Image (tube, rainbow, N blue to C red; front, side, top):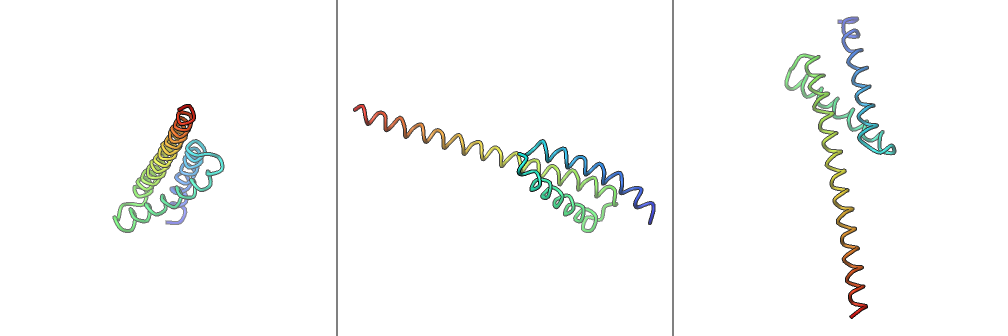
Length: 109
């Protein structure tokens, strides 16, 4: 397979690297970019192994499926975590406002 494998894998790796860099910089804060990109890489490699070895798909098809699966799992997970943190922040703010109102009401009575 030699030169044919390199000619097939090089464009895929360049496109995957570009997509990974774009999604990691737009989806997360700058201090978490490396964590996001690392998890994304691990999931793409894991799904590629699953699709190629266990499901026995062709190499190119398993790479494409692994890319979609890995990227979508990480993007979905990141969105879910962001929503949970946003909900938590809102809930804490509401709790603090209620406590301030209760203290204010108890002082005036």
